Image (cartoon, rainbow, N blue to C red):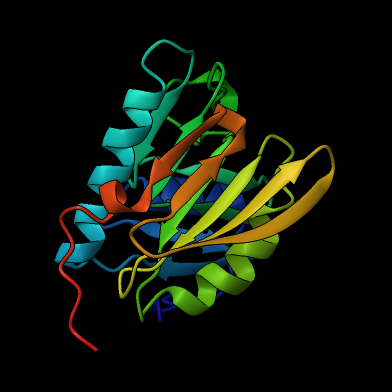
Length: 193
């Protein structure tokens, strides 16, 4: 699991100032600071393919796609994270009017699961992410097998779905498109069961 490193809890303002001077990436979740671990080969290939495929889908539309370096303001008081992939389907809005983050209006968030982060991605982050007013989809992407769990919002209701197997497709209603899992996992080699 991502390691909590703070000896004390930090406010959002303290964290933003402190983190800007650090050599590594950290997340603030419920006023607690966590070091972000590096990703595996499969993790990085999945992130790269998601970004590539979403950029293609956005080619003639307004929107941006950001890799894990884009800080997202989940809660202005206690939570700032670095999702693996962030999609904004309209004009991005950044804290304080800057152009460098934290991003305030994500449309879609993707987390590629790993043993060190899965628990936090499924619990604290998910609970917080689903409260972001602009968010229309949260996706948990397995790197162990072709499986993506989807939480998508229609009006004010969240629904759950799964895309399983290389023949399945991931539906992105906020972008009015589908992406085949065989493309997302194109560069990932799964171990034989």
